[in-house]
Image (cartoon, rainbow over all chains, first blue to last red):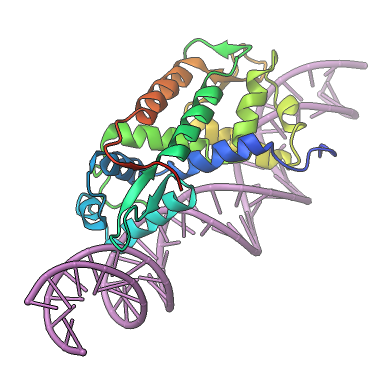
Length: 110
Length: 110
DNA sequence: ATAGTTTTTCGTAAATTTACGAAAAGTTTC
DNA sequence: GAAACTTTTCGTAAATTTACGAAAAACTAT
């Protein structure tokens, strides 16, 4: 039952999935939203917003960093997290394209 | 491990995260795209496209179903998967809103 | 430099995800 | 209604995720 010539996923799909996965936890959605609203982008300002251990927040931030959605330190040595705008725009583009695929046949409602 | 307090996050964020999580695997992105292109939406047509065991594809479909992005059987007893268009539009709306949040301070480039 | 504060890493545990093949259940065709 | 085919469920294993607290590392201020 294996399709012999398709051994990997299209790079585009991998990219979309990577972004989506990074956003696949409510804490990370909230973190992004909160981070986006801040001038200073400091860890504590983010962490204090959530009923999670600092280490857990840090873990979520690492996850977002791995996906390229945020990054550290605009002005070292000041530690600051910020949205990576280039990648944010990329995410926007990918998601928009994906969300607007032509659907040949669909269910109108449940 | 889910957070012990389910009400921790804004419902909106939970919804976005749920959609995002469902799309957080390249197989599921590919499956959605492929499914969207089909007239018939039958399992085998989807499954044959991927180098995965049928049971694994079935699992991914269940995942997408759980998130409400697809559903089975428009015309029983014919087994058919189809995009759930209502929820697809909802996803589109949520993602669009989220992707366009105002970012107070961000990094111009890496 | 030293003390105090902030942030990350480490160690660990439970839950979840991903994958497979085999078996069961459900459909279709003869 | 049997046989053939399609799809889901089950059992299982490995990998990953999520969470926490404690310890370490990195900063800031004195």
